[in-house]
Length: 203
Image (tube, rainbow, N blue to C red):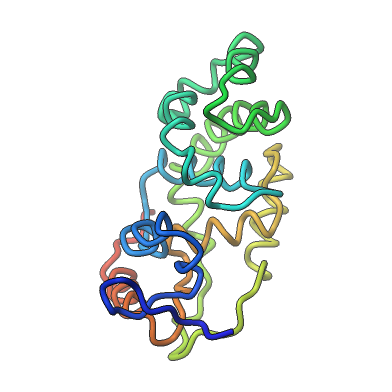
């Protein structure tokens, strides 16, 4: 299968965009561009956890509902929630109603508070794990996890986080710009490379 897809505007994109029109805006505006905002990083880790076992399309089409249900993924707010909020979310047909994943988000918010106290910010912690290699001139084969995602997963689990396996973490790394996995020839690969070069890493 070719790694490229010609979009409705004639531009070449990563082939996964062909699965649904919903993916095009996500690919063009978000996927791979570096992020340093703690709320967005926490949201993405949470949504990747919900995506486990499902398609990203399912989560993307429900993302507005997730944001409404989870207070915009505000870490400080979610850290105070408990069983009443879990019950409310289990009754929310607009999200994926999985008790374990809902409870994991609330647990992870509390663990994120601890991590922020230890590391300064979630962003600083995440970007300290950026792979040291430069983006290769050509994208390599698609992978589900890497040594770096395995290391982050292991450390987060040690800190008490849940639903942060190495595949979930690598999908998060791809989306949040820690790696540039746009296919060679994708019109957005060079744009992401430029954004990553200009990005000021949080400390």
